[in-house]
Every structure is written in structure tokens, then in C-alpha cells.
Image (cartoon, rainbow, N blue to C red; front, side, top):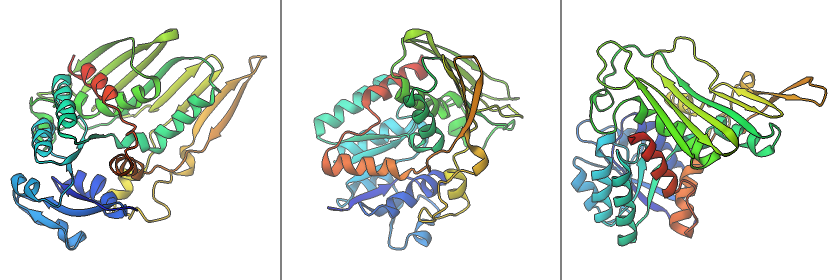
Length: 337
């Protein structure tokens, strides 16, 4: 590696511990330099030598820091990103990037004006599920696609403790929580839709925010893509269902990275990111006589390190970051509509 990008992290809760710290520490192109810990100081136990700041202002005043990871509550993303840019930092921002497309456009323009870069964190592109679907679609085995379903089912009837998700702040509710994941996967594979329709629902007792959504995206050649998520599904359905002129592909949500990281597995473990053998996607292709031929497709290993490598390559070698500004604007225009 040519140099290590000195990196600061704005929170060391679940996302900091699971989705960020292991990767910026494990990638030789980054130096995990500092973390914002307002109350409990826990990061140094896992990452000796990392600086712990008590305030946001102290962290962004650190002249050594080149990249700040904004992994704070959704409604703070725009303000923190703006201040990080003004402090001369590059920024990696968790989804949703902002609450509105107008905020996003303003921040992208500010970054260009200041000569800094913004990266939006969409780790699910590096799920084993997402890469498996991409390979099947690009192989052409299904023929012309006509119907695609992405689902994110959970059963969580109780109101959660994270108020920024459960109270009506900007960018709250399930559509801003899981919607960015599903929209990013669809937009990255199929592009910007011709049109869309969105349905939201509130089904849990005493909920203040949506806990159900369905987004219908329409594409050329009569392709319809349906994105659905709910917090009241006791029997989760298959997460990915694709139908085309020549066949179908069905797969459950089976990427293991988050579960492994929560259990403390190191990303250096040879088992990291490897799906269970019984999680293979089922591919059914019809022959010319109308007879189905079924096969089970192995997935490549999931590896969120691919996102951090993309950030590194953009900052050091000026390579294009795969999650584009246009894709993010499209996503937010659908979320805010």
C-alpha cells in the first residue's frame, strides 16, 4: 500500500464495532486513528492506541484525520457530513446518506467545491446474496427478465429502543432503514427506473413510524421490480425471486457476515463470509420442450472489505467509486416521495 488513510469514526456502537472498525483496522491502507465516544470509553480495549474524543468538534479538529466515517443517527448525517467537509475531511457516510435529495445534491456540490470526496456506505452490495444475483442476471440464463422481488422480512413487534428509528425524525421509519439497502441493490443492477410507486404502512401497536413498505419499480421491456420489507413477518419468505423468459431463480437471504461479526469472528478467519452449504440459490431453466431443469448455484464469499478497498482506490488512485452520486440521488428521490 502506498500510504495509510488516517481515519476517524463517529460512533462505537453496533455499527462502529461490527461494520467499520474491523475493516479499517484490518485493511493495510487505513489507520484507525480516532473514535468519538461521548460517555463510555470502550474502543481502546479492542484497538489499543486509538484516540478517544469526547466531542465531535475535537475529532474533526484533529489535523491528522483525512477520512471521517459518519455512522451516527440518520437525521444527523447531513449536518455532520457538511461540517466534516468544511474541516477538510473526506467522508464515508452510512445509509441513508441524507433525508432528502436536495440535501444530498448540496453536499455533493460542496465536496466538489472543497476538493473532498463523499462515499455512501452500501455494504450490502458485497453480500454473498447480492453478488450471486448479479452473476445469475448477467449470465443471461434467465432470458429477458419480467418480474423481480426483493424482500427483507423480520418479526419485531415491540417498539425498538433506538429513538432515531422509532420517532418521527427526518429519515426515520423502516423505509429509510431497510429501503436504502433494497433500492441500492435494485438500482445498481437494473439502473434508474422509468417510474415507481410506494406504499407505506404502520402495523405495530403504538408505532409512530412506518414499519412496512412496498416499492414498485418499472423498467423498460415491461420489467417490474418489487421491494418489500416488514417488521411483522413471522414466516420470512424467500428474499430474492427472479422470473425471466427462460427460467426462475430463487434464493433466501443468507449472507453471514453480520452474524459472524456480532459473534466476534475476525475478518481474517478463513470461514468469514462463507454461506452455509444449504443456502444455495435454486435455478430452474425450461428447455425447448417445456421441461424444467433445476440446479443449485454456489455463492461467492461475502466480503464487506470490498467497499473499503473501493474507498481506498478512489482516494489514493482516483478510481471511480462504484456507488455513484446519480444512484444515491435516484434512491433518495424515491425515499422522500
